[in-house]
Image (cartoon, rainbow, N blue to C red; front, side):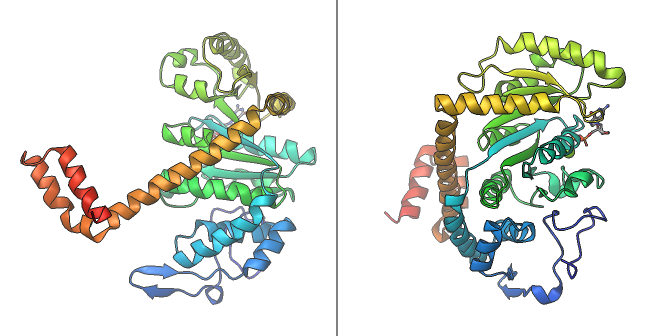
Length: 366
Ligand SMILES: Nc1nc2c(ncn2[C@@H]2O[C@H](COP(=O)(O)OP(=O)(O)O)[C@@H](O)[C@H]2O)c(=O)[nH]1
Ligand SMILES: [Mg+2]
């Protein structure tokens, strides 16, 4: 990768584990057709395939870049690639790490990732964060974050795609998970901000959902945190060190009480509450033990496999809906007639129901 300059957010001493790099001009050809620019991905399908099978991180990075591209040429190639790697995917535990900004997610993922690497696991970290365009990336918002994890040869870190709707980002994240699995990564960690839809989207693509909370604020349960708690398989009270150690234990106790009154996120599994400190590297053995226990129980009961199947079907449906919507709003007849129909509705000349019927007739050419 010596000929490729890394983006500014990558730590200085990092290597290929940072999954993006600025390609030299010679490696990119940008053609313009209308206002659509096309970048050429340099590796062939066979090279991508082979590289992924070998677990080559820079090839994996390029494959994800291909997946993230919106150019129609790339979409075709990406889908071809996915078709061949899907049989190699699936052999991992997919974990979401969520929580409010500042809860300590990135620091925890780095410490946890290092711990898992020390046990011989291969860890891939991906992010879902639609706001990363503005904030310059959540998992790498602080350039020093994950620097030590990025130094591990068994780790792969990929920041969020830099633009797109949550739906778009999530679609790429799902496909990236499959690529990482095919490349031999057996622990996939998805970092997402604990805000609204992104948590629900994360839940729909992982096996295990981990909510990171800071010590204190037990009464948050009354408010918006309740929704996040209901999604969680495990709640980690983070920063259980120094002056906040005692408060962390109190918080743990109050959440332990509270989770008994909440319907578990996963059938047959009682939400666990744990404490951890990334600064002192404590609590991580317990977290991993919990994840292993969860995997064992849900695999034995069939819930694990059942959830994955459901998630795949859900994914298919959501892509279908996106595509239909896109086709509808790009249809020439709809573009031509939409505003007249809207006006007619506003003037009371058409009911919304009739308006929908009219537009659909145009769309389906009835
Ligand atoms: N005391 C303490 N502080 C922590 C710990 N983990 C993270 N922090 C601090 O919490 C802040 C937010 O951490 P970060 O990982 O960026 O949070 P994120 O926004 O959830 O990804 C930083 O200032 C960290 O230094 C911990 O285990 N103990
Ligand atoms: Mg972060």
